[in-house]
Image (cartoon, rainbow, N blue to C red; front, side):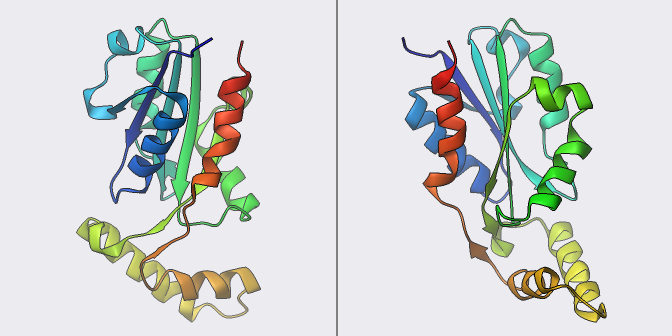
Length: 178
């Protein structure tokens, strides 16, 4: 049975949009930028998949999209977040989920993290300044962990650690829905 899927994204530097496009292709779904979505739009679909970037501990666009979902007739709400942290940064990723979802939502809304990278050339000016300040602070920190040392090295420049393989847990989850 074909799933009726709407993939919604909020993307700033392009990584989230790219993942949303891959998911849409795999699911044979419909894709929309979150600024064009209403609860009425969502009501035409059974499964809503929302993606946003992890930014300063928050997932861009999640709060508004979640509110629209709760006012729709859609059956399932699935979330994915993209970010510069590698997938093995489990503590950072779990903390991000706890900062964005209430305890009940952590179990009610399936959620997936997909590492992506940094694109300084597409980043808004204030985000660039924040990243430069954060990088400077991290460089000055004494007694850095091995992870922090690695992190300082990679956030000084643009990089891409995204991969189509990172969408597969989400695809497998949606495929398993009745």
